[in-house]
Length: 249
Image (cartoon, rainbow, N blue to C red; front, top):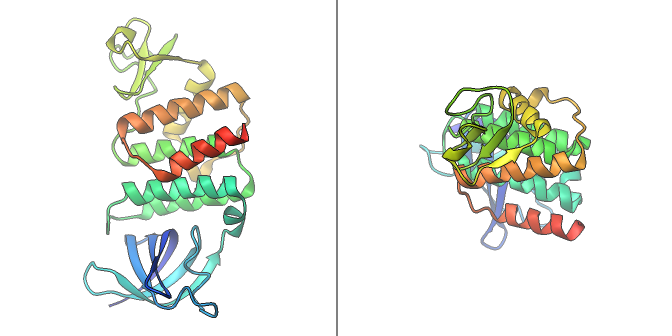
């Protein structure tokens, strides 16, 4: 059967001497693996299509739910800026790997496609990568069923006062209930405000958000703790991004 879809290349790997297998996050069919014959050859008409982060229209033939074989394709947005800058490439790779790990094969991918497409677009426009990535991580957690409870204390329901972040329990604790997790860390009002905003905000509606360096650092730490405690994914792209950030510092 012939499929024609819009998709984003979230993974691309060599197969044999001149071929590639790319994994697409598609709008209509979720995550799909597609075999691209001759993509590594110098004169291949499909060479640009298999580049990571490419957003395009793809036609492929597939029987059942197995791997497809590319028939033809057209690049809509190459996102070449994201591949040319090592920092942008690292953030883009992390977002794509998150989707690759969290999205099941053939699961409906409309939500994931929209969020990833907006993430890559905003990243290329120069938005703050830490703020943008934190919002994207919030959307991933929510879509996976592990969205943190940040509007009110998980036990008392309090909405005002000092709060502590419990990554293990998946939310915030009031001063009275912080005993529920001795490892919980006090969260600043600025970061809590951002977390509450992110829990309600669709990434496609993100405006320009300016945050202080200390707020940015705390936000990144909080979201990292939620991702590690709730999803437990060991991502190569995350480790590389952390190494890169340490090097830049």
